[in-house]
Amino acid sequence: MSARILIFGAGYSARAFARQIGPEAEEVAGTTRSAEKAVRLRQNGIRPLLYGGAGFGADILEALARATHLVVSIAPDAAGDAVLADLRAAGAGAMRALEWVGYLSTVGVYGDHDGAWVDEASECRPVSARSKWRLEAERDWAAFSRQAGVPVATLRLSGIYGPGRNAILSLEAGTARRIVKPGQVFNRIHVDDIAGALRHLMRARADGIYNVTDDMPAPPQDVVAHAAQLMGVAPPPEIPFEKADMSPMARSFYGECKRVSNRRLKETGYRLRYPDYRAALQAMWRADAWRDEPVSKMP
Image 1: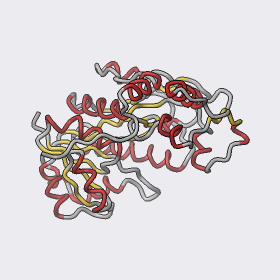
Image 2: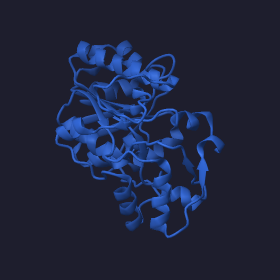
Image 3: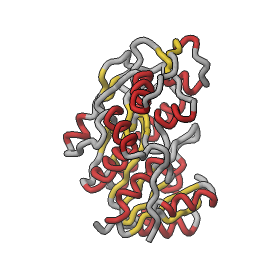
């Protein structure tokens, strides 16, 4: 595949994507806010570029002119989506090779549905400011797609975990807690399935919205208990939600409850590597691959 990929916001999920797509792409470049983080990008096969969200420098404009595919993983704020604003300022001529955009969003845009199932056609009623900003950014990217004549796939991601970010690691560190709120469930997604879905949708030049989430919405305390079982240790005691000491952001997640369907993604032909947290935690534990994010150095 002759793809030249530019990633805006080469964080945890985007680095996993780069590791998967790297061997078949002509070029993968990605942005970071600091020179110190550039080393990690190189370790994951990404040519690092500095970008702070306030205009494109000459190096980014050069990469943008070459790019056939964009992946956007920078969250919007109250001022809007900085990447989209800078793309519009650069003008259509600055992205003359562009064929496709992947925008990483969140299932938080659905808000609270009292535990009911939601899909891409469900009403979005975001609660938090960050989810409201995300929904507005989704709409702006859809408008960009129509104006530029370029397909934009919006991937709504559920709770992300994987090597270096999981319940086994939290148990080892002594930070895992089993907070119980009756009826509360969350969906999750392994980082390798984010990368795999993004790669799959890019190859298909898919357009529109796709929930990228697992098959098993489940109470958060069950995940910790399963990790403890794998490790052969006692799980931490259950803590009632109303008595839990939590940050305002962490508490806000418990204010939304829904079960998110991934049927549309599966209808494109994608098959999850890890359909639920049990399969993923077991695989990471058996392979001793749960502590650290893998790397693959640039050639």
